[in-house]
Structures are given as C-alpha cells and as structure tokens.
Image 1: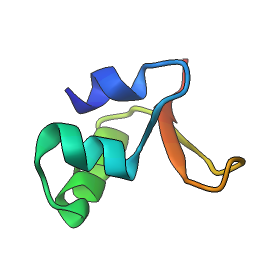
Image 2: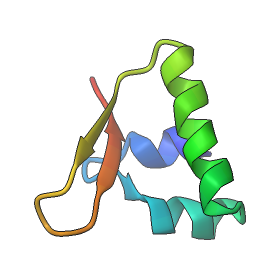
Image 3: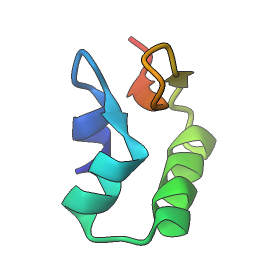
Image 4: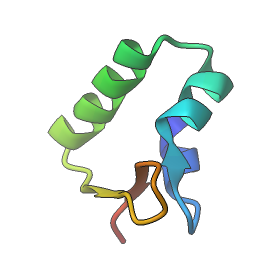
Length: 57
C-alpha cells in the first residue's frame, strides 16, 4: 500500500501515508526506511512546503 502511494506522480506526504495506513508517524517513517533497505530509491521533495516522498523510476 505504501509503495503504491509512492508510485503516484506527485508521491505522498507523511500525513497521507499515516492516514491511509493507520500507522503512527514513526512507524510510517520506518516503513520508508525498510523500502530503502530493500533497494528502492525514495526521493524527498519539499518545494511546496510539505515534504513529499516518491519512488524513483
């Protein structure tokens, strides 16, 4: 579910991931770390003020 949200064109914010999964923020960040350890490149962007995460192509 997390990877699916991160594949969207605009990615997902931490708040969106927390809302959809029902997890606490620290658990959600740990899931992002787990994806990185599995070899996924996760890109952070914060141009609009809120940090957004998405999977690199």
